[in-house]
Image: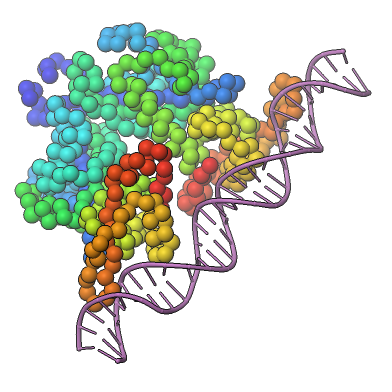
Length: 231
Length: 231
DNA sequence: GAAGTAATGTGTGTTTTTTACACGAAGTCA
DNA sequence: TGACTTCGTGTAAAAAACACACATTACTTC
């Protein structure tokens, strides 16, 4: 070790796996950016960047998300820290990975501001990723699956008003298995976290569907009491 | 590493929450070391230390564990990364926390080699901890609870041969709730991960208990097939 | 305005899982 | 041989999970 500090320093980055859901195609998506610089120039990569000395990890993740993709106010949670010695060809870089869930409203905003070209890809059809980002993505997807099963985070991927069918499609794409309509509705509604709205979702040539919204206040209350929200 | 850094560097540490289980007292325990240096001199803290440039995070955690506590071959898993700006009064230090599960056999070894005095504390009665280690510990305990519920990690805290009552006591101390003996045994045995031994555990003035061992091979097989091991 | 189309919304019976619960058996010690 | 302590076991009731089909509503087209 030949450094002048008393301890070795590592370059610290945050990388974000940003999930979105396309209701029309019922497809889970990830936001990627195309790298403008070497290494991995022109490759697709997770949005991310270096952590500044005066900001926490969470702040860094949120800042990068805003800078690179113009997303804000999203669900954001630390995922795992990747510290293989040679994951960056330049030098030792340790990356704290986060995953984020975004509502469709934010998507367009994201897609429009491409300093470095940002695009949504369906998770089932990703391009090759830079660095160890494929591994990070896989970890994130696994975590999302686990999370969705036990906590009501699905709403973070839908617009504020949504139908039960939309919600079911979301669960189906994330979990990768079809669900029974009646049983799904029964269970979701039993948690008492959805409030039916007066409005309906009218679209196309068929019966309009009831719209719901998620009740975050009620969720906090129930969570405190230790309720579970298994689907 | 060069002297002129294009990006800010952070000092990177690993900290380990080492769990042990005292079967005789049915108490979950944590291994702490007493700090010999400022800051927090003479305070109790989690074992840990700086990550070297040529080692991965996992390697660093394992090395620190061996150096400071003489433990090896334990279950070790990354927990969470703590990156509050001022968590270390000296300078910016980001810590990747791990949690470890150790078998009783290792305990004595650990207790004996105290360069810096290492001691086991029952989790219900911890001294004040240095830095943000109390928060790290709380995170680890919550994780352990979650993990135990869905994966067979309890065996990591017991000797290679154990009785079902010992296992039950372990679950009870970690989960913090009493369990029904018959239902517990039924469920544990239904997973088909325990093999009964010829020997029995004879102790004190009563009927000896059947000894079991965990079957890691069978576990790997079942895990691959996607089986769950909920308790 | 009648008929066709497409997605919504709803209930019940069956199976599986979870829970609650008590007592004889086996060994030690005096 | 009697007292003591922990071990090991089964069943019935309740709850949860699962499988499953059809009438309703709105729009479109003829």
